[in-house]
Image (cartoon, rainbow, N blue to C red):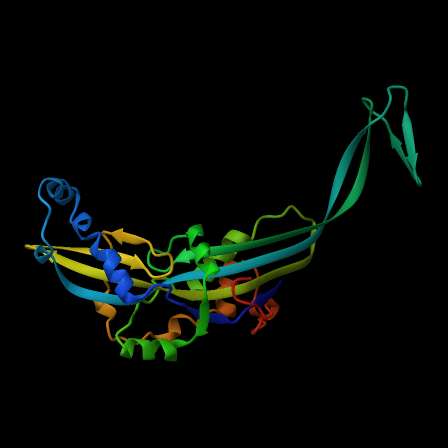
Length: 280
């Protein structure tokens, strides 16, 4: 089996909305963030602005994975075809073979040459490790390729970089396992697994934590889509901490060998640097 592995990459998506715009949108959702009871109460008595205080503002980069895997398998198999013939037929000669007819049928044995190709693009939420096809919509927006050093510099400027819960090797392993299907073959003549993309995207999110009385609530603003969401979270535990790059650069022959039973390292051809464009 031949396996081609693209270089792991990191992309940072560009903010479409400023922090000031985000805070204004979040402020309009502050009452809703404190739950249904607060909203009902607000219908009878409009709360004053000084009842709310912004106790924490967070600019963060939140991760998701894009993994693209294609497969190509060529194989042969022997099959018997039952061909109907008129009732008066007793035998049929094909080439040098004489095929007897039985029950208005003859049996033809042939060798099938088959080829199956698949391509699967999977998006994984970096926090809950679940597949999320909707994340593909983010690829419509601008993103620049970056690296761990550049992200470390961003943390020094107050940006929170949230590391993904799943490592690249785990994500790739699961996607490959789901892409490889069972085949009915007598002889396999070609097996190719191509990992076309192992990309970690970071999308910008602004979060604001409000306090009202003895309660606190969080409003998140998606700096790409402009969507505002209540009931979110903040990640102060990563504030000021540089991203550890080792979690990304850990996909290798051992990972691929693990998900391809019977393959050994001698049969795996790891081709680094497969030329790919972002979003393709």
